Picture 1 (cartoon, rainbow, N blue to C red):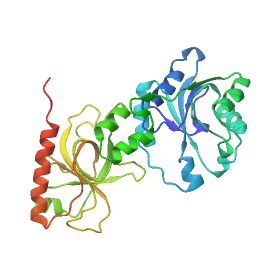
Picture 2: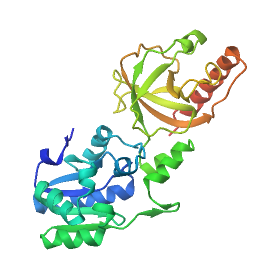
Picture 3: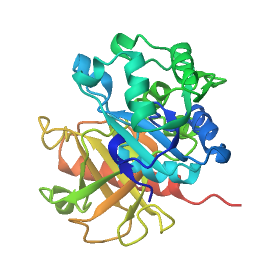
Picture 4: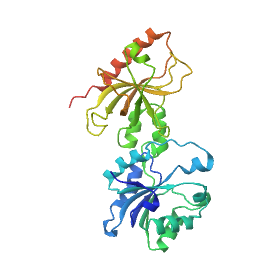
Length: 314
């Protein structure tokens, strides 16, 4: 797998795509392609992003990610990128002028020979720098700059915000179309209270990285992969039904949780990592009159998930 490194650890010289690239949608991939297609520069194709997100540091806004850095490595490698560089974003970096950022980080540290950004890229103290600033500063040092126009489709501008909105609405089809791939997340299976097992529907309780953006609350047909069956990289996809949210019938005050029931399969999963691909939201969260009604509804959810996950002919 390609390395995840700080600017000081990066292999240089570089051709670098600079931006958040959260979700790696088609617009992002077009920016990245402009630095992987420059073999004549004899430099390392690199993606450079900030971590944490600047708005987290400057405004205290939590920014959940469509792709965590470790997940992004797997997505960048097939695109021809050879390293992911995370620039630690702190208040000291935020005070750098646009000129100092280009000189100190992009030119001196990363020894950029080409820089690619999207048309809406801003940088430097108070977001003072734009693509024209970058072009003037970099080209004065003999560094090529590519500014890629914002990509649009029938729904408007291609953006990470649209993907988040689709996921929040439980629209996995729209999210996957924008991503250009299925949306997935992963988590470690931890021991729960065993209530699902008592009801006849044992579930794997997932501990998911709190920085990961998850779909809207509800019950989903899903596919899952374990460490034993390929972790989502070509292994057998196990059909599942997933509940995302609190437990309104059992404990209305419980925190939101991710629970996955593998259909027609009993596997001891505690301690394993599970990769989950929600496929379709079957229903929203509901409160039932008791455990018997809840168990009956889970049975209906399981059957609906089986039908949805059946392979299509042809």
